[in-house]
Length: 188
Image (cartoon, rainbow, N blue to C red; front, side, top):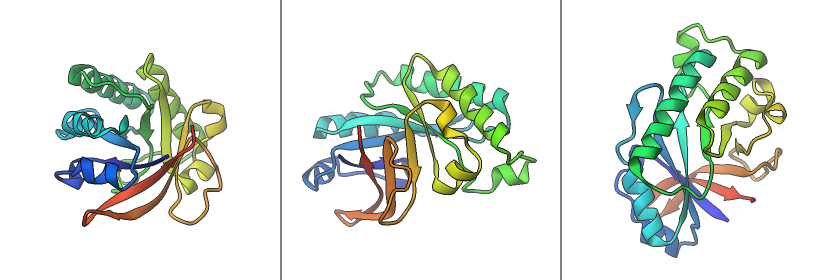
């Protein structure tokens, strides 16, 4: 199955055009950190469903330790509950440092710390099904992902997905209807 992941950065989305282009699913951002709400989450899930797509979610993490991840999971769960939307796919914990926040705030870039942070989020967000999103390098260097026993979404922008997990983000340059999206393949 082919899909996209979206957030407020994508602006207004023509979901019918995505469906017509063969997109089957969307992973919509709930928010980020302990308090950052993505105000397009509910609209994106609703409109994706209306167009015929199935949906999951992701939450971008700023957690520096497991205690932070627990707060983030509670916040993410509250966003989903209050939105009233149905998610057919998992909620993914987005573990990366795309903006350098973790590096600037004393983050311990160790397998133990990162895996413990992921585990705290996964345990707290239950009963929702949850997985972990990260780049291939993070999954290899910082996350003991096999120990987490959850769906893994590998971001590896290339022609090959070395992990062959639940989902693969293969590009950040998928163009549909003149807009650029992250492209994903779901293997469920």
